[in-house]
Length: 162
Image 1: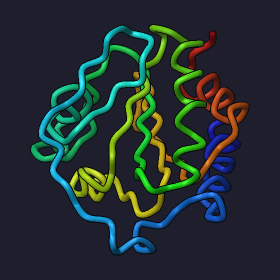
Image 2: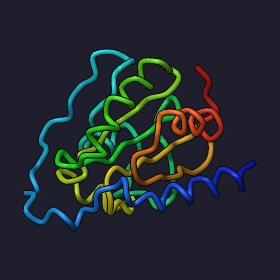
Image 3: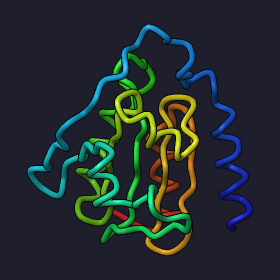
C-alpha cells in the first residue's frame, strides 16, 4: 500500500505542466511578511509566515529530525501570488478545510515572501504541497492536483475521513 502511494506521489511530481517554476518570474520582488495572519476558526486555511511555521508546524532552523508540532494531520500549500495553478488550487483547499473541519489543518505559505522556509523543503515550483501525518515523515507533491486526488491522499496517507 505504501509503495503504491509513493509511486502515485512520484507521478504527481512529474506534473510540471500544471506547476509554475520559481525561476520563471525573476521580476517578482521578495517581500518580508511581518505578521502571521490569525485564523478565525478551525474551518479556515491558515496563512503562515516563517515565524508562525516554526511555532506551529516545525522548527526547521534548529532541528534536523522531523518533529511535527501540530495537533492534527496537516497540508501545507507553498504558493506564489502570480501562479495560475496556485490560484486554482486555493478554493479547492478552502473547500477541503471546510469539509474535513477539525480533522485536518490546511496551511498556506507564500513561498516568494518566505524563501528560506520554501528552500528548506526543496520548493522549486508552485504549487508544492506538503502532507503531514500525525505519525511518520511528511511527503510532498508538486503541481495542481484535482480535488479527488487530494481526498484520496488525505484518506490513505493522512488517514483521515470526512
